[in-house]
Image (cartoon, rainbow, N blue to C red; front, side, top):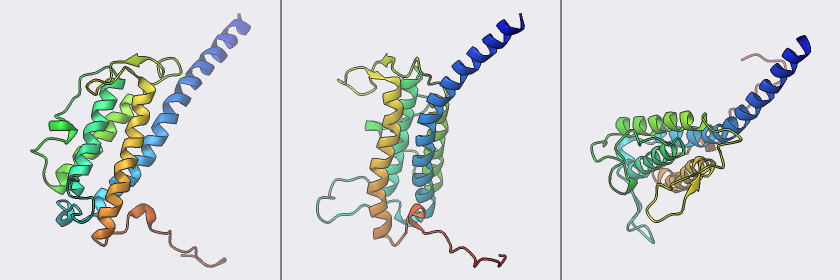
Length: 191
């Protein structure tokens, strides 16, 4: 009886471990993207949220704040689809976030809330369901796998992060992720 119980416990811990590994794989990537874009969103002053470059090939790009709203809207859309749920918020027109969200505080909160929702979605991924096809959330696109949608949240976030880093630097803001750590105190000295 003891051997059978131990075998069952071992087998169930392996299955649980595999599920946690898959979920943590996706979620770890999301945490990294979230950390970089949220810290940048918080570092940029509200006065620059309506900034968009105008020279060169920038005539039709989103403003800094609109980029963040778009990232959040797509995160909500992909996470809801991967979880087989209805999108819990207003995505606005063309995944640009709702028009009612305008201030820095509102935009940053919408962004943070989208990541919280995406974390919940990624926690549901397992080795078995990550390859399950679901209807794509984008018109005319073929079905997508749940894991693929979760990865898309991360890659899409980093795509727009790269764009808004340029906006931030044009407004004399160094992205927090690019700030070098303070030098270590000399050996033997306390802070």
